[in-house]
Amino acid sequence: MSRVGRDFIVERNFGPYIVKSTISDELHDILLKGAYKIKKNKNKRKDNDYRKSLAGNLSEEYHYGNIFTPEEDRIVEDELRWMASTYTKLSLKAIGTDYSREPKDIILLRPVWVNFMKQGEWNPAHNHTGDISCVAYLKVPNEINEENKSSESSSKSNTPSAGKIEFLYGDNIGYMSTGSIRSPKEKEIYFFPAKLLHQVYPFKSKAERISISANFADATTARQNLNGEGAR
Ligand SMILES: [Fe+2]
Image 1 (cartoon, rainbow, N blue to C red):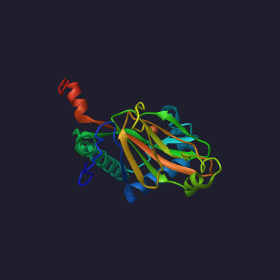
Image 2: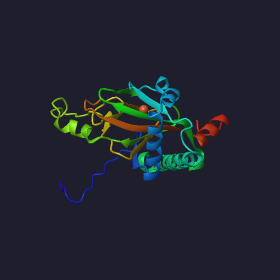
Image 3: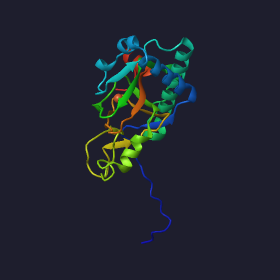
Image 4: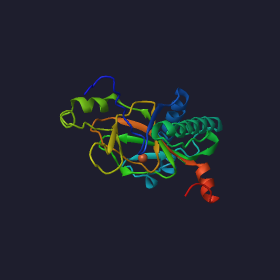
């Protein structure tokens, strides 16, 4: 038997797919500025409190409501819809099925919201409304990464996961992974199917991480469903 000259190709084109990218500095500034604008104002903290609609066990989660100027709002909308469209356009490469949508066919569902995650807070396994979701990181204190490397509780673990996000999918039938744990970095953004279960582990560091999240609807699919079109 010759072992020479044979390729081994990993075929993995099924199951949900996740796409990581980065947000622009411009979007990062707008979202962070908006987040602090809410946090610093007692009335806005009350009016924009979004915890009742969210799974997170966090003391501060706010919807952006009407925090942005019209110009800022346009930038938020344009960039997020373009990125969500790019997510759909990677479907063929990722899973062998074409779900490509142009930005005009992607609806950003309001409101976009922001999470201030502090020591000991967590986000239990949950999913979102809509078709596509994203999470982006505006501030990621280095203490959280350090905690995974040096704390007594995490550093010796075979799964150091303080402050990390985990996407969950499927039953373990062997030769597979049912979880994907990511270590968020500042300005990173993850796109994923809205119904994909995910959770965020707490961290012990005296630090605050700021992330935002948003959901999108696929207008083409919605239209097809309403018209009774599409494959059955
Ligand atoms: Fe979530």
